[in-house]
Structures are given as structure tokens and as C-alpha cells.
Length: 361
Image (tube, rainbow, N blue to C red; front, side):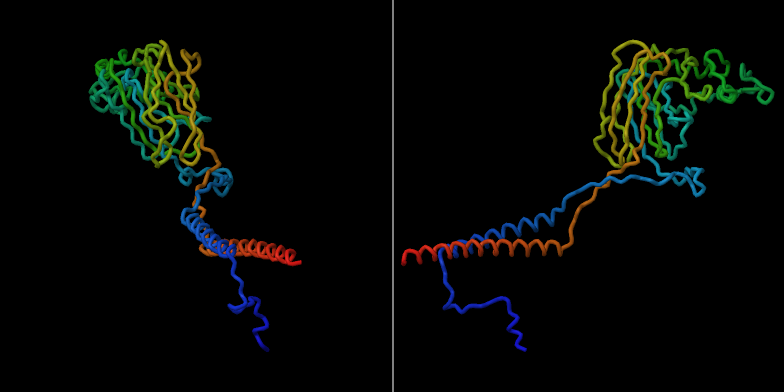
């Protein structure tokens, strides 16, 4: 069997080939076009596009029994916040993170908070440790627990013990100036009048709908509700100016230009002021909105950040292709360009040939 019979690529001897000017021009054009198109194909391969797809997290947060939620196995949010109050002293400002539904304190990890006292010019004075603010020297004598006195707790020898007794009894915190053990604390906070405060905090929280309060007043639970109270400092919410600057607020370890960064909000009216910022978190980034009200009748004043985590995740990836796809496209370009030019050349050649035949006739 002669394998040459299967040759589908016919060859002509040079003496039988006919060269034309139009064919030469089309050949040069085809070579140039093929080079340009192949260059763009290679450039597109090396600069793969970035694409996104949406991923819906259908995993249940419960354990094998379908009911119990294991907090240790749940993912966390990396929350970082920095806010400056130029006209509110640090002893009035408290930071709380609570569950939006139960109004109970959220379990937090890696908590780092710093309350920096600022003078009237905004310059740092020193950091204030709120956890030790009401800690005073323990008295030797048996001090009264006042309204929180019970058979199990007869003596309160320090201001902290008085506060603990009121908290355990679910009573409203006492007024500092009316408690003998708390008079040193009252004198300490009196010296902070007219100061400002910068709050820096970071912590890890569960990825559930929650609220972060940076608000004035001692926080405690009253009949199942999280409330803030200023009476222990003999203050009223209407007397405070909560003008503030949010330097940054993020829910991810990634640094970026988030919506609430460098936001300045000025209190323009006298009275209690409540500002609520809402954040819808999607893969670390978030969209934000705010609303505010003056002299709210049923709500406490302060800054309230309400955030929720969307179950939908936007996954970004680089859509790179195998090298074989690049080779396929290059061969397609070469074949298409050469085939098209050959077709145009054939049509042009046969058209001219037909005209010459008609002229001879």
C-alpha cells in the first residue's frame, strides 16, 4: 500500500505556481495579522482576569445532635475600632458587645481595649483602666453594703465590693458620692471633668448578629435588658456632648478603606443623642448606614454599632487557563487568518480570470 495516496496536502512544482500582486499583498497582511492576534492571545493568557462567584454557607452552627451550638468551633470576626470623643471624659464611656436577640454579653476573645484621657486640646494625658476605676483600698472596718445587704454579704469593705453586691442583687448602681467606700473614686473622676477620650479596642467575636455599644454610663442588666446608667456619677445624658470621630472600624484582619473610616459626626443639638451605625458584613468588607435621634424617650444615648454577617460570600479568584488552551487559540488564529486570506485570494484570482476569458471571446 502506497501511503502517499492518503496525502491530503497537494504539492505543486514551482513552475506550475502562479504568483500575483494581490496574493503577495494578502500574504503580507495575513502574516502581520497573525502576529498581532497571537501577541494579544499571549498577553491575555499572561494577564488572567479576576472573577467572582457567590458562595452560600449552608452549614449549620449546631453540633452532631442538631441542637447544641459549640462556640469553640465557630468562626470569629476580627473587630477593630478606634473612636475619639473630644468632649466626653473616659470615666463615662463604656464598651460592651451584646447579642442582638438575647441582650446578653457576647463571649469575646483576645480583648484589648485602651481608654486614653485627652486634655481640652486633644493631647493625650494617660490611659485610664476602667476595670480598676472603682477599686479602692480595702477598709479594715466592716462597711455597709447599703440596699444590697443580705445574710451572705454583710460587709462591703471597698467600693468594688459595694458595686458587686448591687450587681449580684440586680439593683441599680449606687451614686458614688453617697457611698462611703466610693468617695475616693468620686474625687478621682471629678478631676477628669472637661476632658476627652480616645477609645481603641480589638477583639474576636462570634460571626452572629451583635451590637457594640460605646456609650456613656455604667452598663448593667435590668429585667433582661442591657442598660446604661449615669446616676452613679450624678450626670444626665442630656448634659453630655458625644461629638465623635471614628478613625477606623473593621471586621477583618485586612487593612482597607472601609466605609466608616475617618468619619466625623458632630452633635448639633443639646440633649441626649443616640447614633446607630449598621454594618452588613460580607467577607470582611461591609456596607454601612447610620441614623440618629435626639432625646430618645425609650433608648439610651451613645454610639451603637449593629452588625450582621451575611451567609453569602463573594469568592474572588484568578481565572487562569491551561497552556494547552493558549496553544489551541494560537493555532485557531493562524488557521483562520491564513484560510480567510486564501479564500479572498482565490475569489480575486478567479474573478480576474473570468473577466479575461470574456474579453477574449
